[in-house]
Amino acid sequence: MTLLRTLLLFSSAAWLRAQAPPAQPAPAAKPTVTQSVENPTPKAAPVVPPDRVVVAVGDVTITAAQFDQIIDALPEQYRSAARGSGRKQLADNIVRIEVLAQEGKRRKLNESSLYRTQSLFQDANILANMTYEELGKSAKFDEADVRKYYEAHKAEFEQVHARHILIRMQGSAVPIRPGQKDLTEAEALAKAQDLRKRIQAGEEFAGLARQESDDTGSGANGGDLGFFRHGQMVPTFEQAAFALQPGDLSEPVKSQFGYHLIKVEAKESKGFDEVRPELERRMRPEQAQKTAEELQKKTQVVLDPDFFGLAKQ
Image (cartoon, rainbow, N blue to C red; front, side, top):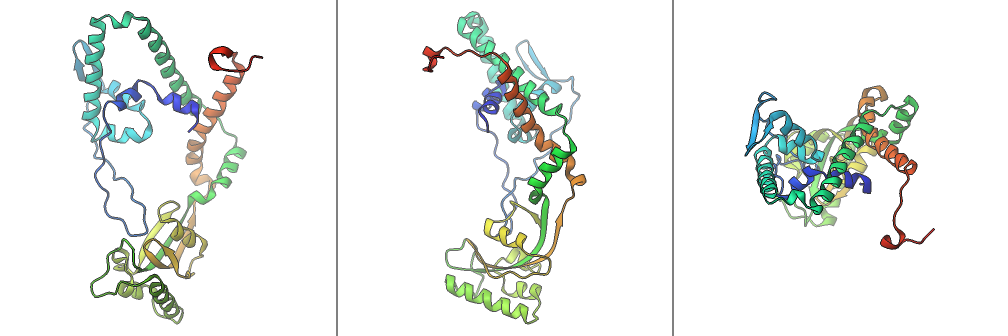
């Protein structure tokens, strides 16, 4: 993350986050041994009219619409929880801030030089954040630029449908199946190589996966992992799977779980027109950053060389 983007995130909402850690999501369902864990979808929060007052602290009120605007100011990774399981926690933080702020006014701290200085910067920071978002939203892209971005990130829109057979080895986090030996790495490799020969000789991959795979989750389905994208599997497994063509059978592939035999059933790649909205969404923050840097270059900026330890011009 660039320095500018980091500074823009330190809005009043960032101070809210500092009051207490975000609510932790419930554990995801156990994935197959090759998969990365993904967060579950949070439970939807109740819907109320936007003009209903949902928080009142003294004579300060916040409507449902204003509460949603506060959530919108949070970094993206916090918004989902704040709209669901973390909604009450966010409200508690808002109440805490308002109580202290009202006490600060009674003590006339808002009349101090310190308050005026920090408030001046905070207001500018919020406006800068809004401007940064607007720069991204209003960005226009030539088709040539979008196509260039697509070609540079084309692999991210590929997916593979594969099956696998896992032969675990000593040290693997995968539990030993009942009645099975705790194989050394060399023994696991030898078994995977033997299974590969049997498949090449005509035995059905799915049938062997049901009998021999130590990944019991996918093994029960003939080793079927369905479709997966880049970043969803452990690195060595992913690299091997995406290098194969439909119908290909891999050599034994080592991971922290053991040795895998991988058979690719199908490969798909989304075309430019299908993913163009996603491409432009990804490009908007980059364009906002570029525009912000151009604006800074055009603006006269003076830093005191003595205060900042700079060489005098």
